[in-house]
Amino acid sequence: MKTSFAAISATTAFLFLSLTAHAADLAGSWKGTWTKDGDALPVTVKIESTNKGYSGSFDSDALQVAGIPFSEVTGKNGKVHILLKGDETTTVFDGDLAGDALGGAFTEGDTKGTFALTRAALPTAAIGMREVTYRNGDVTLAGTLLLPAPPGRHPAVLFLHGSGPEGRWANRWLAQKFAEAGIVALISDKRGVGRSTGDWNKAGFDDLADDAVAGIRALQSQPEVDPGRVGTYGHSQGGTISPLVAERAGDIAFVVASAPGGVSPADMETYSVENSIGVPSLPPAEAKAAKEFVHAIVDVGYRGTPRDELDRVSAKYKTRAWYFDPPPPENSYWMIARLIASFEPMMHWRNVRAPVLLIFGSHDERVPSVLSASAIRAALFQGAHREKRQMQATVKFYQDADHTFTIVDPPRKGGWPRHENDYAGMITSWILSQK
View 1 (cartoon, rainbow, N blue to C red):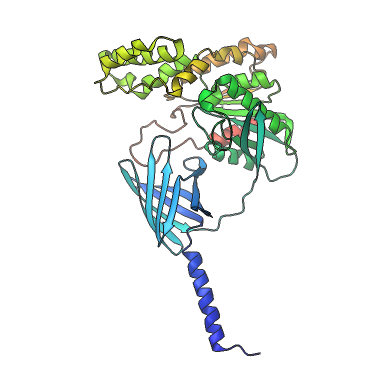
View 2 (tube, rainbow, N blue to C red):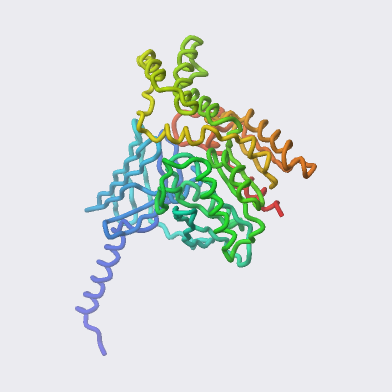
């Protein structure tokens, strides 16, 4: 049977239109760079079609992030608009879609930059993922298991949450690195965040520790997990409560505490807030005034002082450059402060029997790193570790890094932040060495 020229032409036209439609579709995987201050950041962007339009996320090994969700993705008539809301900044991308190229400009506060992406076929993921839920009383926690490719039972890590409304994506990058190295990782939404029920605004450390113990039990029940090799990783608040979690779980195989506080919550808050308003660099008289203000906030939150004194001090220093309005009385800051004020980290570290990895940045602006490391080591030696007649604690200091292990020494002006390159590898090697 002969095929007519008209039929061939129609088929060719159909294929051309189909390919053009595909090329113009915003959905898909994109690789390229975001550039600001002449500094190009390699990124991978994933965009999916939804019933309401589009959703998307991005990965960047350089920033040590994965699966960071965009708040908004829209595309129409070749014009693309993407919104990325962070804890402190919002980045707005506006560009053009032309076939397999996507590019334009972005703004991040007063900073301007450009982006250039090309459609890419990403390799098949080397790890598996499975959604899980588990319960602590009437609270349901929702999370994602990241699974190594090789079959069998593996060591496993439960990620503990930092302060604030932390979702599972906050630890996605490190969890992926663990899974790629042969360690099962469980990341979850904090209570009241994402798909988890409850309310983190009303949760003290006891509540969060019990949530974590429920996560440990969930991990131990998974067929891919060696139940005798389950440990925890926690950064900042997660690291601070990790000894309480280990104490309550009773059968933790290891503890990785990154930037944990080794002082009282009130002292840690004082240290953090003073650094946030630049007290160490102020002239002596200004530093004294700023400290009075900070201490008034901490006294109300953590020591139960009536707010009248804080109001008086606030009125006194309201015009100073370092001043900020304290949270209003109804803000959850005050409830959380009251709930955690009595926490004594050393009391719990003394009861930790598992091997411990402590990680600090020497320039930590949130946690007094040297003091915390010394106090935690002393508590471990005084307690359960002394019973074993050896110190099963490894302490790692990054001399040029801050609280988030961003390199700050020497100071960097403009461009993208740089992080400690061996952070994930160092932790992974240590976990795998715990038999």
